[in-house]
Image (cartoon, rainbow, N blue to C red; front, side):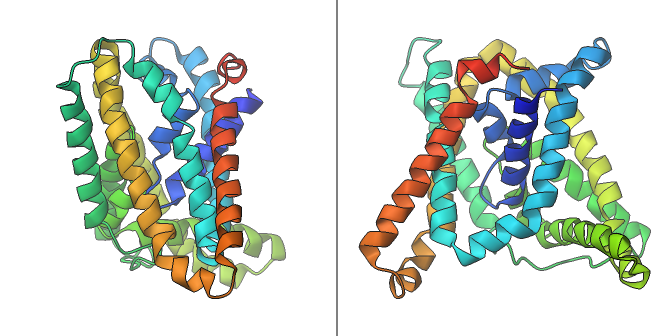
Amino acid sequence: MSLINTLKGFLIGIALVIPGLSGSIFAVVVGLYEKMMDSINHFKTNKKASFQFLLPIGIGAAIGILASTKMILWVCVEYPIQSYLFFVGLVLGSFPLVLKKMKKIQFKPSYLIVSLVSFLLILALTKMGEGGSESYIAIQSFDSWDDAFSMLFAGVFSMSLMSVPGVSGSIMLMVINQYGTVYNAVGQFVDLLFYLLKGDFTAANAAFGSVLLLIPFILGSVIGVILIAKLMGYLLKKYESLVYYGVAGVMVSALITLFETGVFPYWSTETATINPLLLVVIGIICLVIGVACTLFLDSPSTDQDS
């Protein structure tokens, strides 16, 4: 099992939780996206190799989601500017990889139309899903088959779109008003584990109703990935550079979303208690750390370790 791929999966898992961040973009950033799509598309014909490659990524992503659902969202609430500038750094650090992919074909001004369309599309979807991490919890617990079908659809919808590089699964859940439902259920799963360890079976039983919602959601997510994997595999094989022109537009949109979500709204509040110059210095440090993390994870040495 590749420790590096597990770490990369961990970052992808964190990106899945944060509104505005894209797990698929981080898969691109750390050099895993194309390999993941290829492994999913050829799973039937090459089960062992595909499983060995996808397993550490899946484990890392699961750990990232469970570890970050409460912790990362808490950090974003308590230290929004610092945390979101770190995320900005992660995205900025991925531009060298995307530019490298774009340079595989000779530039034509018309290619920028792809970037512009993807930029506007993702920005529009993001605006539709505005509401923040405190979005309304539409379904509190698994009470009927209607709840199951709602969560199944949420999984298919969010994961199929999230598999497109740059699309934020969290934002897609906000669009259909299920972000709070899903991550409340994930948080309840973490609580359930603690309750079981403590022997508090009454509290564990109360949390279990929310946790059950994850079953149809995960099933829908798997269906969504399978549905989109072949399409993305085809596009990457036939039009790789054009796909990355689209990704570039999406990344610019993601940067705007991150600033609008976690930097601009909190600047006046934060500078009321912290010296503005000090806040700028701390923010730049967080941004640089984010860039460094991405560049390290996308280095040739880590790409070879799969």
